[in-house]
Length: 315
Image (tube, one colour):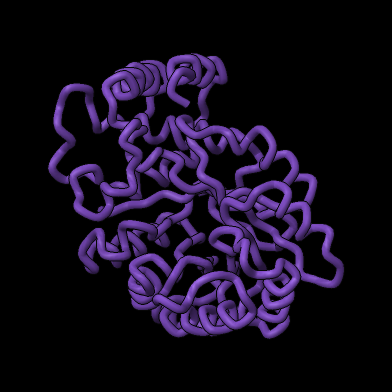
């Protein structure tokens, strides 16, 4: 496993990390989730990402169980706040940040997280109130650093200009060969501000594994066939022209790069030095192993260029 610095923090995170969005919030059996977490740690994956809203606390509780008894200094733990946890609990107000962080720490069975992230921007909460609450959480030792996910550039700039508050060190955008837009503006500006990228959905929710083929039903054990996990997968990514292009790219990955398509897609994401870590989901330990192997993959730039050309009409 290889590691990169997370923005201007002193956190060194594995370039392949383990997420828990759909999988550990009820998408897979708990024993499978526990096995995936332990396999990830065995392979040197030290960064684990979750959020309070994943299963409304379920993913955090599963991770709390999985990490119980493991040296707290051996892994980097991140969670998030914003989305509704009840009919009355949501957003980034001071009261919500205090309440939700304490609840997350309880479920995670720890006295602090390494990274606390604003899951989206809150148009209703004053930005200064949000930043002051996050700064208090850092000063209290409940989180070491703070970050954001999918914030617009003007809000990132506004937070960076505020005096007397803790600075963000991480951004968590969606980023993959099918969703490359953050690299145009978000990546370079965040780099100027000391903000590293932790990207989600780097294999496009499994589409960039090549498991889906045009004209064929999704495999029975795939995300697309799962009642809850499949609902979040963009339907356009399962259309025949996209899947045909993905199969063409799979040939490049396997025949010319000597990699699985998922490893090829992860290597493409990690070619950008602004990316500190790529968050991968896994429902089985063998998927963790395959994803972790992408940390060592080197791909000729011309192969990436050809793959990008194939996908260009669908990005």
